[in-house]
Length: 283
Image (tube, helix red, strand yellow):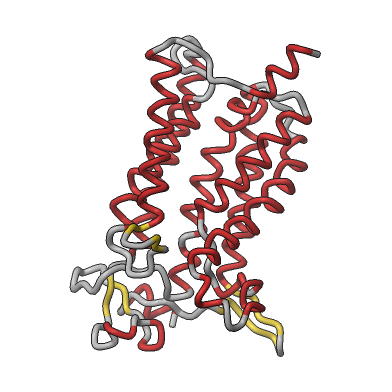
């Protein structure tokens, strides 16, 4: 199957990495765990460059995982409730896929806000360090969709078309075998955003008077979300709210939020409001 993926037909070798008896290690879980470990190491490297103790990230990653993964799953389940209403135990079958990055961002942001306040750290300084790791993790995690043969786009005959097994095709498109590999589009887009954020981060270290705290975080919101808007338009499994694709609506809101942040920093010449720094100043 691996040979098929690289030498012939572009298709998933299956969701299971390896299996021993009843124990199975799935690609989806492996990739999420890998993204967390790689992200942690990246933060521990970048943190000291912004004056943050690298050891703090060992605690922060626990906060983020505990908050982000359940939030990502809950967000997905809420919009797909009819699929789970009859068998609610499947809500916990996260290894089968079905987590939403926007849910993870909401949960993770709340956890980061509480963590920064508890440790008297700047929320925006922490977020500038975290966002390159987050977008890199998203680039890695998207490959979980590939192995699960999910989150693909409309039928296509492009040279890089992705073969989807019959059982994974939408009921009204079973006669089509090849679809847009939207997981690949987003993974590549996220790698490009990662390169931009890292460049901006290190440029800011050399020119702190030009790159203000919070700039990297705002650039993440804009860069990632712009890609998600157009890629989501190709997907067949979008979470919907009436006639609207939820991810597109949320992404446009995040583009607006990031743009307001940059205007606040450079148009108004003010620092972004920071709840944690306000508490530190009072102490």
